[in-house]
Length: 151
Image (cartoon, rainbow, N blue to C red):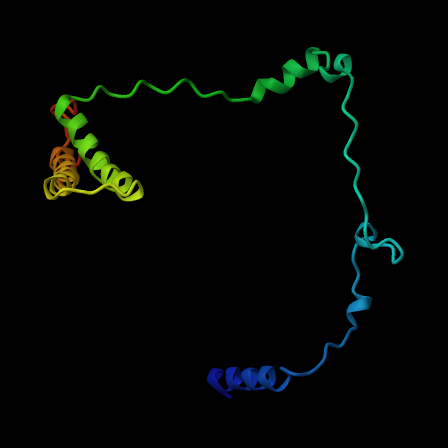
C-alpha cells in the first residue's frame, strides 16, 4: 500500500462520517462546576458596589508596597522634537492646508474661484513633493568615517 492510497482512504472516511452524529451527547461533556448556571436563575442583576468612604479610599503605604514597585519600569522622558526649518514648515502647511481649505470650503458651501482651487491643489502637491525630495536616502551626516558593511 502506498502513502497516497492511505491518505485517500483517510479522506474517504472523513467524508463518509461528515453527517454522523457525535458519539457522546453534549450534556455529558465535563466542565468545571464554576461554569454551571442554575436553571431557575436565568438573569442576574449585578448591583454596583457602594463607594468607599473618603478615609478608606486611600490605603496606607507600607514596606510591601515599595517592594512591589521595585520591578516597575518607567521609561525616561522622550527627547525633544527636532527643530524644523522654514522650508519644511511650509511644506507641511501646504500638505495639510490645501486639503483643509478645500474641505472647509465644500462644507461651508463657499464659492471657490479657479485661482483658489488651483492654489490649494498646488500647495498640497508642492508640499508632498518637497517633503519627499528632502527626505533623502543617504546615510546620516553624523555616521563618521566607518559606514559599516556597505554592499
